[in-house]
Image (cartoon, rainbow, N blue to C red):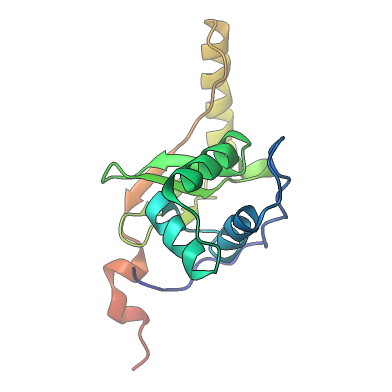
Length: 161
Protein backbone atom coordinates (compact mmCIF):
# COMPACT_ATOMS: atom_id res chain seq x y z
CA UNK A 1 0.00 0.00 0.00
CA UNK A 2 1.51 3.36 -0.99
CA UNK A 3 2.46 5.69 1.83
CA UNK A 4 1.99 9.41 1.46
CA UNK A 5 0.95 12.22 3.71
CA UNK A 6 -2.68 12.50 4.73
CA UNK A 7 -4.39 15.84 5.04
CA UNK A 8 -3.86 17.50 8.42
CA UNK A 9 -6.59 16.77 10.93
CA UNK A 10 -7.32 17.08 14.57
CA UNK A 11 -6.29 14.11 16.66
CA UNK A 12 -9.33 11.85 17.13
CA UNK A 13 -10.76 12.01 20.62
CA UNK A 14 -10.55 8.98 22.90
CA UNK A 15 -13.29 6.44 22.35
CA UNK A 16 -16.05 5.81 24.81
CA UNK A 17 -16.45 2.06 24.54
CA UNK A 18 -19.83 0.61 23.57
CA UNK A 19 -21.95 -0.60 26.47
CA UNK A 20 -20.74 -3.96 27.74
CA UNK A 21 -17.36 -3.76 26.01
CA UNK A 22 -14.31 -3.86 28.23
CA UNK A 23 -11.10 -1.92 27.66
CA UNK A 24 -9.04 -4.99 26.78
CA UNK A 25 -5.65 -5.08 25.15
CA UNK A 26 -7.41 -5.77 21.83
CA UNK A 27 -9.87 -2.86 22.10
CA UNK A 28 -7.08 -0.49 23.08
CA UNK A 29 -5.00 -1.76 20.12
CA UNK A 30 -7.93 -1.17 17.76
CA UNK A 31 -8.40 2.37 19.06
CA UNK A 32 -4.66 3.07 18.70
CA UNK A 33 -4.68 1.72 15.14
CA UNK A 34 -7.35 4.21 14.10
CA UNK A 35 -5.69 7.05 16.03
CA UNK A 36 -2.51 6.43 14.01
CA UNK A 37 -4.37 6.12 10.69
CA UNK A 38 -7.43 8.37 10.93
CA UNK A 39 -7.83 8.73 7.14
CA UNK A 40 -7.59 5.08 6.11
CA UNK A 41 -10.44 2.61 5.65
CA UNK A 42 -9.16 -0.84 6.65
CA UNK A 43 -10.46 -4.31 5.82
CA UNK A 44 -10.84 -6.93 8.53
CA UNK A 45 -7.67 -8.68 7.30
CA UNK A 46 -5.68 -5.42 7.46
CA UNK A 47 -6.96 -4.73 10.99
CA UNK A 48 -6.12 -8.27 12.07
CA UNK A 49 -2.57 -8.02 10.65
CA UNK A 50 -1.99 -4.56 12.16
CA UNK A 51 -3.16 -5.71 15.59
CA UNK A 52 -0.89 -8.75 15.45
CA UNK A 53 2.03 -6.50 14.46
CA UNK A 54 1.19 -4.24 17.43
CA UNK A 55 1.45 -7.18 19.81
CA UNK A 56 -2.29 -7.75 20.23
CA UNK A 57 -3.07 -10.77 18.04
CA UNK A 58 -6.80 -11.45 17.79
CA UNK A 59 -8.61 -14.08 15.72
CA UNK A 60 -10.70 -13.13 12.71
CA UNK A 61 -14.10 -13.67 14.37
CA UNK A 62 -13.17 -11.45 17.32
CA UNK A 63 -11.89 -8.73 14.97
CA UNK A 64 -15.17 -8.79 13.01
CA UNK A 65 -17.16 -8.61 16.25
CA UNK A 66 -15.12 -5.67 17.54
CA UNK A 67 -15.36 -3.81 14.24
CA UNK A 68 -19.12 -4.35 14.06
CA UNK A 69 -19.63 -3.24 17.67
CA UNK A 70 -17.56 -0.10 17.14
CA UNK A 71 -19.49 0.60 13.92
CA UNK A 72 -22.81 0.11 15.73
CA UNK A 73 -21.64 2.54 18.42
CA UNK A 74 -20.88 5.16 15.75
CA UNK A 75 -17.10 5.09 16.28
CA UNK A 76 -16.32 3.42 12.95
CA UNK A 77 -17.98 3.78 9.58
CA UNK A 78 -18.65 0.50 7.78
CA UNK A 79 -18.54 0.72 3.98
CA UNK A 80 -18.00 -1.45 0.94
CA UNK A 81 -15.23 -0.41 -1.46
CA UNK A 82 -15.19 -0.66 -5.25
CA UNK A 83 -13.81 -4.24 -5.03
CA UNK A 84 -16.74 -5.19 -2.71
CA UNK A 85 -14.48 -5.49 0.33
CA UNK A 86 -15.98 -4.37 3.64
CA UNK A 87 -13.85 -1.59 5.11
CA UNK A 88 -13.98 0.24 8.41
CA UNK A 89 -12.95 3.86 8.79
CA UNK A 90 -12.93 6.26 11.67
CA UNK A 91 -16.43 7.74 11.77
CA UNK A 92 -16.66 11.48 11.31
CA UNK A 93 -17.80 13.29 14.42
CA UNK A 94 -19.67 16.53 14.99
CA UNK A 95 -20.45 18.79 12.07
CA UNK A 96 -18.59 16.72 9.50
CA UNK A 97 -20.93 13.77 10.17
CA UNK A 98 -22.56 13.56 6.75
CA UNK A 99 -19.79 15.34 4.87
CA UNK A 100 -19.02 13.85 1.48
CA UNK A 101 -15.61 12.26 1.07
CA UNK A 102 -13.18 11.15 -1.58
CA UNK A 103 -11.88 7.59 -1.16
CA UNK A 104 -8.73 6.37 -2.88
CA UNK A 105 -9.24 2.93 -4.43
CA UNK A 106 -5.52 2.13 -4.07
CA UNK A 107 -4.41 3.27 -0.59
CA UNK A 108 -7.91 3.61 0.92
CA UNK A 109 -7.22 7.04 2.38
CA UNK A 110 -10.25 9.23 2.81
CA UNK A 111 -10.34 12.95 2.27
CA UNK A 112 -13.32 14.95 3.55
CA UNK A 113 -14.70 17.28 0.90
CA UNK A 114 -15.45 20.60 2.54
CA UNK A 115 -16.21 22.67 -0.54
CA UNK A 116 -19.96 23.32 -0.83
CA UNK A 117 -20.69 21.66 2.50
CA UNK A 118 -23.44 24.08 3.62
CA UNK A 119 -25.58 23.72 0.47
CA UNK A 120 -25.01 19.96 0.47
CA UNK A 121 -26.00 19.65 4.14
CA UNK A 122 -29.16 21.63 3.42
CA UNK A 123 -30.04 19.36 0.48
CA UNK A 124 -29.33 16.24 2.55
CA UNK A 125 -31.62 17.49 5.32
CA UNK A 126 -34.41 18.03 2.78
CA UNK A 127 -33.97 14.48 1.48
CA UNK A 128 -33.99 13.03 5.00
CA UNK A 129 -37.07 15.05 5.96
CA UNK A 130 -38.92 13.91 2.84
CA UNK A 131 -38.09 10.28 3.60
CA UNK A 132 -39.09 10.70 7.26
CA UNK A 133 -42.39 12.26 6.12
CA UNK A 134 -43.01 9.10 4.12
CA UNK A 135 -42.63 7.08 7.34
CA UNK A 136 -39.08 5.84 6.89
CA UNK A 137 -36.96 5.63 10.06
CA UNK A 138 -33.29 5.39 11.00
CA UNK A 139 -32.12 7.34 7.99
CA UNK A 140 -28.47 8.02 7.25
CA UNK A 141 -26.69 9.49 4.24
CA UNK A 142 -23.26 8.45 2.99
CA UNK A 143 -21.78 10.21 -0.03
CA UNK A 144 -18.46 8.98 -1.38
CA UNK A 145 -16.55 9.79 -4.53
CA UNK A 146 -14.07 7.08 -5.46
CA UNK A 147 -10.93 7.22 -7.56
CA UNK A 148 -7.17 7.44 -7.13
CA UNK A 149 -5.64 10.09 -4.90
CA UNK A 150 -2.85 12.31 -6.25
CA UNK A 151 -0.21 10.29 -4.36
CA UNK A 152 -1.30 7.01 -5.96
CA UNK A 153 -2.07 8.42 -9.41
CA UNK A 154 1.25 10.26 -9.63
CA UNK A 155 3.60 8.56 -7.13
CA UNK A 156 6.79 10.06 -8.56
CA UNK A 157 5.43 13.61 -8.32
CA UNK A 158 5.72 13.51 -4.52
CA UNK A 159 9.13 11.79 -4.48
CA UNK A 160 12.26 13.76 -3.65
CA UNK A 161 14.69 14.25 -6.60
